[in-house]
Image 1 (cartoon, rainbow, N blue to C red):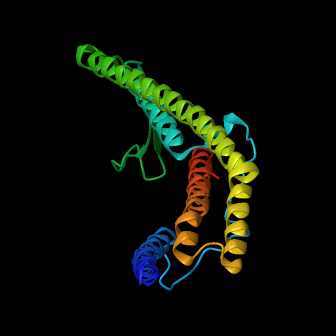
Image 2 (cartoon, rainbow, N blue to C red):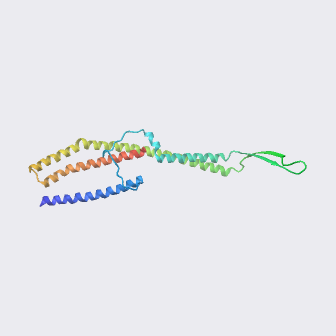
Image 3 (tube, one colour):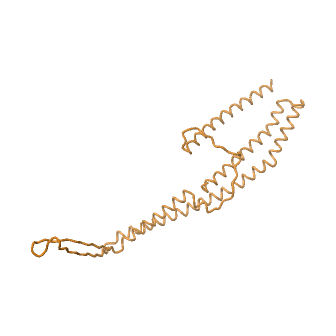
Length: 238
């Protein structure tokens, strides 16, 4: 009776976990369709459940969309400052006129008169314009500081991501070299003992729980490794 109750209890737990995984899988599918802007159901394909990451040139951070946006805003501020500065320069004007007169005595329609006008405009009241130039230059400095901060933030995130990657790689490596082997040996020994009648099903379940926990911890470690690689790929715009 005890073994039966234990088996039914485990079956109930497994069924509940399966339903939760199905809900999470459905949610992730919807999120994936939203990201790729697709109207029909699609599933991503992967050759392996554990991702790989190859070292990249850190200068690739310059291709990050956030940094590119800041660089564009900085360039725009520079251009605005130049435009405001140019308004203090003398303005040259050139005009040309071609006309005819007809008075019936000395001039007719074939008589043409040409004139040229050349002018130089010099700003007299420049106080307001100087204030606009000062404001434009201040905005230019602000955008340059924001660009520098964004670059440093991305570099800091990159360093943190590389450290996380190193840590997660070591954890997964330890699992693959030791823990998973131990888990397989535990399950193998317990299966033989159960077949020989040396232990009952309840004992097999309790003792095999450790091996199952090791496998679950390994999958959690691989998930953390994959997430760290995804973050690095995001920073490198891959």
